[in-house]
Amino acid sequence: MEWTIAAPFVHYDNVAQSQWLELFMESDRHTLRHVPRRKPLEKWHDRKSKFTSLDEWLVYLDQAKRALQEGADGVITVFPQLASAVGIQQNLSRQHGKPVVAWLFNVGTCSDGLRKWMARASLRHIDRFVVHTRRERQIYSDWLNLPIERFEFVPYQSAPISVTYEEEMEHPFVASLGSAHRDFPTLFEAVKRLNIPTIVASGKSALAGLQIPANVQTPLGIARTECFRLAQQGRINVVPLQPKDGITAAGQVTIVEAMFMGRPLIATRCNGVEDYIIHGETGWLVEPNSTESMLEAIDTLWNDTALRQRLGQAAQRYAQEYFSDQAAGRHLTRILNEVADQWGF
Image 1 (cartoon, rainbow, N blue to C red):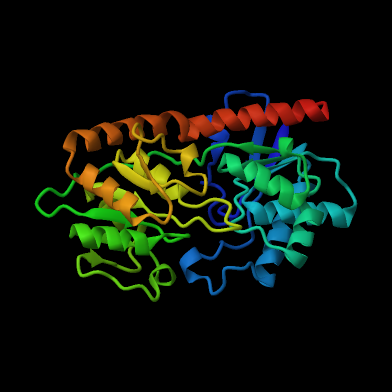
Image 2: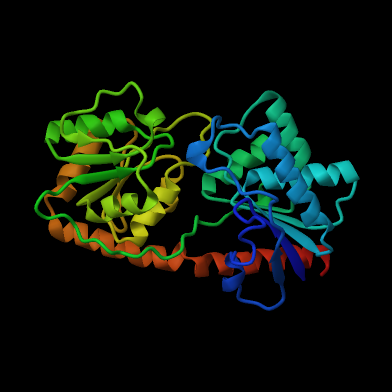
């Protein structure tokens, strides 16, 4: 069975070099080929708005239309906008004769009103949605008014990350990366009371209005490679999260990357984190909005070298088994087989 892939990170300038999970498929039953965007996707930190603009939607719609018209048997989309764009194009043409699999369907917030109506109208014929956390299956099923069986949890995957730095021993510090729905006030209060040096690599909006303790550094605008250096040199990695109504998932990218780098990890028990960290085995979970829980976890791991080593090594093994491209390729093969069988291919 032949599938076209509509992914926002593939455009005319890089399509010849672009590779996705097709390299890790476990069956020759399916062939996959990319349909590129006409221009590169704007970098996230250059965006002026968190919402997709009209110009961006026109680019998505064009890519979706070409993915549907390429003559393949089915379409795979990556990220929610392209799933909606394919659905809109199908509605406009009044043709729903191809299966569609929506990979990485990670909507940050389930909106109400017109946005909800548009989502339901454009996504009602998608055959399978692949989501980051188990809780999202029910969230999206309710939001889109679709059977929960159409939503499948597949862990966020990452390519291998080179570990080129060792833990900083002379001047140890806690590292905290990322910005989405972070609970920095709780982290700041904990490390302030413990007086432990901390480096937070985040964005201006996530830190706006917060009182930064004297023992906390907040470098802004650093490159991804620099973030990896901080994560690898930090004695502990912490992903503090806020549980909020309407938030579907958060923190998974940072968590998976830290685990691939073999870092001892502390994260807040919310937003689907439990699907990635087994408390006391592959990381340490703390209770939401609890300074005492955060303080106790940091103090425990900071002073226990053997525990940190055990958690980091177990996290790395777990990530390699469950969060790798190879693992995602196995899931993709299975899902495409199931959808193909349902359509009679």
